[in-house]
Image (cartoon, rainbow, N blue to C red; front, side, top):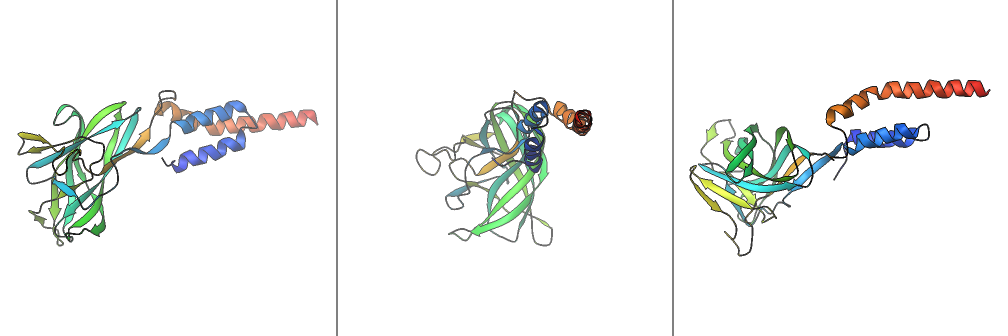
Length: 245
């Protein structure tokens, strides 16, 4: 998992000031511990060849994901297929729920999508990587479901087109289900190959939170007081040096 620039900065600063005061180093260490940003879940790499499941035209697909400790989910990256590579995938309806197509809905919405062309597969179908943001969703440790549907496609001149969009299938560890016309729900396990999950390519970006570290508000209060703490240490060291001399 990669560290954020702020985390790296605080880590270097800790090494610089720890000889001055052990307490200051401890404060910085705690602050760094609660800023571990990166990928909080990945269902594996893009396949692009095996199969893909529809996420528009009345079809909604959902995949499970788990987080091992409390986290803040900030975005989703997934892979899609389309027949016409010049068509643009613009928005997606999403939800994060406690069960497949049911239970508690923790958050939902319609999001703008940013995409990058990856390759044309062996059937000549264009495969893209797509990303959208989440509204800093707090998740406790546990299992959740990412639901995608109602994908909107536009042609090269910006007109909405009735084109199908498909979510790349990679048979990662997630479980997967599909809902058709709001009623029929079916498992995607073993739908293409025996002993496979039928799940899709995606990852959840965010920040891991440890129960041993303070809440975000506490962290930012600490960081806000940090310059004053540095000045206090500086002047105390200077006074002590003058006294010795």
